[in-house]
Image (spheres, rainbow, N blue to C red):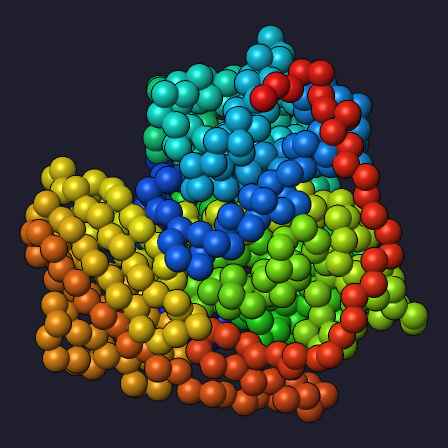
Length: 568
């Protein structure tokens, strides 16, 4: 699957036969961070357009956009003076904040912006004198999503950047002290998800180090050293090749695995080890070989479940794996991984939400003939209600965490080259972009398309100076050889990509318009039990089964449960 790294991955697979799942080796000391292959744009530079705006607006008007008002784990959550928490890890409001910051600024929605502003202000105003953020007890994992949200907030609103970064650095300084004290604050979830906090530290290092480079690097090293040894977990010697049944160990947990797909890509920036590059390739290969689905996600109905079409894939796992895929592509540029992110965004994510986004499933199934309490229950470690649509079927985490899916897909749809001289479109869809490239080159881009529901993509560019504009071409479009491009109303020509699967277009000073036509073939594949799977381009087709809806329960609006500390 991952041709650019396959030889290194094969060699690395032969070397990875250790059994430990917690890292015991201290990563190589680094004096600086390697840059990623591509540079992410700040939140707000890339905005949705067309039907993607409609989807994000539905989310804002649906469950995730209203949880601040009524959903107990947010509206009365422990992060802002309330008493409600579904876990002593205190992750719920932190999850919500991470997703809602993106939606608020991408839509410029005053209601959502007021919500996240109130949350941010409360957290910073109530930060401990030693730097601790959020509620007790002092477990670190529940802070990671908040830090991801704070990073986005600081990007989107420069008037608050200093305040936010100052607060973040106080917490990082405390984290460094805790980790030096026998890894205080790390439990199994924090160990499994070390990479999510580490990438925030890398953003601070790149953008706001303020002379604290050594401390930030040291904290990254400590997080990796105290974290799960995902290289070992994904090795051919250790990785499960089928359903793990009731083996609910932390390393078989689907969401952990989805987040871990990026761990060595994150670590590579400071280990500078080619083994981390090879491990990243190898883990995507082995996970999807034994558990992957044509919708871009993999089976894990809480834990790894093999290839059977009646097994489940968790909504949290979908959005986390999408984010991991974006980060890994930005690190190493592997086309197959970006293809998977598009498939998840255009298939797995919408499949598990109702059209108005007020209800979701905990688990979706590839072959799902009904959504109802299952008897017998086919899920090894999740409840029988897991595929029912509701506010919190099975467990609350997906209700608060799913909101990051669309915003992060949109904000990662464009990147720049490391020297910031060129713009790269990673995901095909309707977007607008405004940014300033190197040499003060102001660029705006409008992508007008119904893709993936149509084949034509019209891109209009206005630039102060000429530059090279790149578009990533999906593998399926390269394989069928039917794609064409027409620049400034010229005759269509066959598309031609470089070794990184990028189509280069010369964007002149002034206005340049080009039209991509990417026809797709209908493709048939068969599942392990012989089931027919039909797709076209990035879309996986489903049968429109006649159905009836039945409301099993309703949830009263709990507006009276608003935090005493929240305003707006």
